[in-house]
Length: 601
Image (cartoon, rainbow, N blue to C red; front, side, top):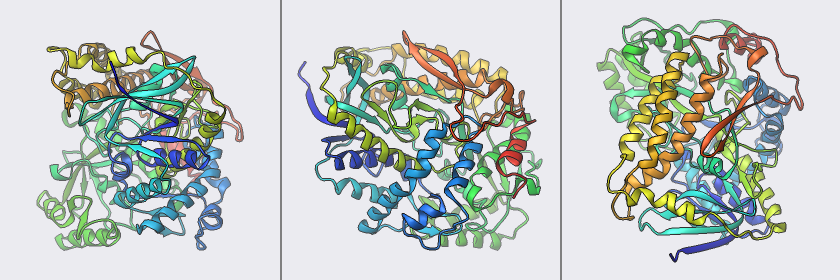
């Protein structure tokens, strides 16, 4: 079969922050670069959901990014120490060092794009953070890519598998979502910048965060780590027009929203977040509150999980109707640079205020997945186990360990900068390898279209989300995890019989069949690792094993594939710069108080 073949020195897969920065960095080093994006560059990936902030240390913000008022008490050393502690010992300290060192240079590059394209970012000196909106960030990315006009961008292309030959990765294969045309991309090196994965029904991320890069890398021979750790934050459940918004978490920030909520279960019983100085956060470690909310609300929600599932109320009944309406007006004024009048993204804030008032001044929320810590194993140069394959951003594992305290946006930019430069050096000396698995990859890709009957990708996807919500959510126990693992292994086996008959032109079920194969693999591995981590650590909260057990579980689960099935090993963290904390703690909250917040100081 004749197919379109596109050749380059470097193929970048992913059209958001990590992908664009990788492509630009590689191009500046003289490499010929092709970037492939599942959607439109700057308008896909999680970056478009941006509603908060990102930052670097104070010295980097002042000396490199030009912010003269940046807080100099927030040193590079304190940022590194915070990241190591927040990883609960599992973070790769070499990667954490690179994050601290490279972050300011990557952010400086972004800020230049912001200035040139007319976007607005707002700097907060005390926290050393820039606030921005997803549209503004996406516009800056698109402009950044356009500064390197020799980069060829292919949009609306779904990549299904990597191509390999002579023991190296040498390209990828995919198809145009509108025409169905299958395209081969040949390259000396490939950079995966495809983002994380999202197996839940309640989403506050982009709906196509399906672990594509992770699945492709595993099938090509790479390994993954830390897949059990999934960061969740308060997210709207109802009203439905606002479902999936991270607005509830932003409403916990006094500088954005002045009213304080009381959390209750659906029967009105309060979920206690203690007013204890030991759990007090400051500007530089405020992200720790994401994990504290999970940990403190989890026990009360767990008691009624079979009845109500992932639902709780943020209760504002202590305030008058007018105070609630004014609270949302203040919130809008703090976000007005990036959204329409009285809106946050697509949500009409005054309509939401009225609906809350009508619902007893309560907002129904759940904990939605914001970020997945696990991903492809890389070294400090962003090389995977396979020659010719690099990875950057949320598709990787190791930087954040068990909990992401640093910024995902800074991560994608800093990772992309280093990955692009290193891949360019590799490609300069690499020989061209001939792909050996093209036909096998095409057969796997097109098999669902050739079946007139079989498993529906749509129904299988719904089942995956149901299994994940019930047994692999932000609160866990051994019984639910075992049931989820049994169901997920059966579900993944059934995907060999998916059917997506019909033409290739915008065949949604065919697209789903490709993404679901990757998402199911990620989810099976994540559930296995959670089931076999019989403790709580970071974002892995087991109600039947609340202790942080460093004596037995201070290791990362890793996984690779053998004959299509995951094979698991344990990897002990290397204390390259700081010693590991080997003390045990009764629960995650106590670890946070003593090891991260250090008594609230």
